[in-house]
Length: 230
Image 1 (cartoon, rainbow, N blue to C red):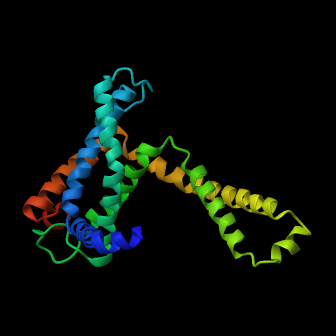
Image 2 (cartoon, rainbow, N blue to C red):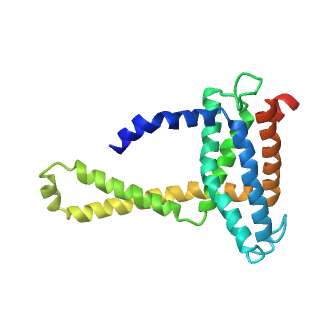
Image 3 (tube, rainbow, N blue to C red):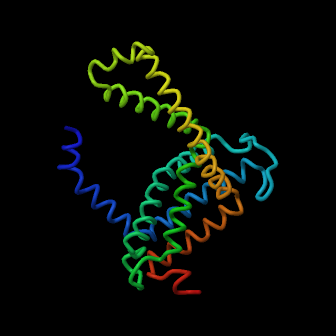
């Protein structure tokens, strides 16, 4: 019922918004520059240095500033998802990054930039969450539930002669959860490493400058650094 209501009443608005996001990559490049600015400020304060890590303490940052920077960083999760969407749709559908963009088609570098930075934005605020374990538990529970629903009536009696059906479901849950968690941990670890690297102050500074310059050029003037100025 909820799905039908969403589909009938709200889906046209969702579809229109996603279409606008796909056609507004330039705006999200600019917004990404703002998020990178918060990375630059927070990481520089936390590390105690622009280049080297001198301290892991956050005591040098005022509470209000730390909360503000963290809230903006957490909002990067949503921005990251939209960045990935804008970049992916731009590449797949060959959509220009802004309505003023002169060349017919996507700016490929901008699309790749949005996808990479979007992934970093999504994973940076959740570095401390046991995401791999959560995914493993969800997958294991789903596998056990699907297996229980697929067992035909009467077959559980045959299974019970060899092993307790409940114990079998628990074993399936544990095995699937472990496999998914270990696999997810590897890939999530790689993505989190990329996220930490991109938030390193010198790299965050480059992303910030590029985001502001490229975003203003695309959104305001319809040109790109890489297709028009180089």
